[in-house]
Image (tube, rainbow, N blue to C red; front, side, top):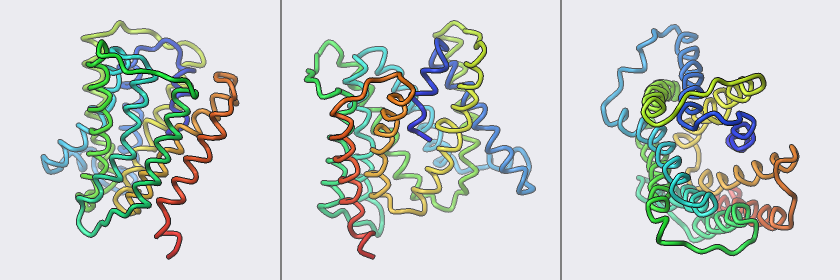
Length: 273
């Protein structure tokens, strides 16, 4: 689902980022609401959560997008995207702080290979350099990576919180994104196919994806999930190529080898079992 984010965002046209985020997260909130009502629970059932859980959930969902937009506005997209893609690697590293988790060399090497593969996709094999002029953008991208990796690892510590509670976080994120839109952007009315792209965002990469991710990090092997996450930019690039929005190149093949190989290596102990 996350691999469709770039494609659907491109198809949404010139919708400002905070407006697009607010519209998509309203749909994500609707998913959580329908889930809750289908279980015979009231509208406000999942709003009665401990304050630390609220802090982690809202910071993760809204904070990630907030700092990502700041990064893109204050640094070149290539460098900002590459720094933000540190989050799967940070998940693998931070997982060592969790109870009953053990970080082995193949987990770390697998995640590093995935990062190298993502780096190839982002840079298209071209050289680039960091410019101090874009320090604010670089710092925001790093905060973005730390925010999502921290949210993912800390969510595992609150495994008793049901996954449908993510809908409440999405609702608050929609409100905060809407407020940022009012303060910093001008509203653009979606037209034609843009509405379908927004619907796709709210149902997929900015909707169900957060619920499935929450389920996965609470019940799966978090180190393997971190390494597997680098498949998202790979699938995203393949989708963009398929729709004629990006050129095919040798970097995609090499990145595929690095990301898939890294994921298999990181899952070594799981595969042996």
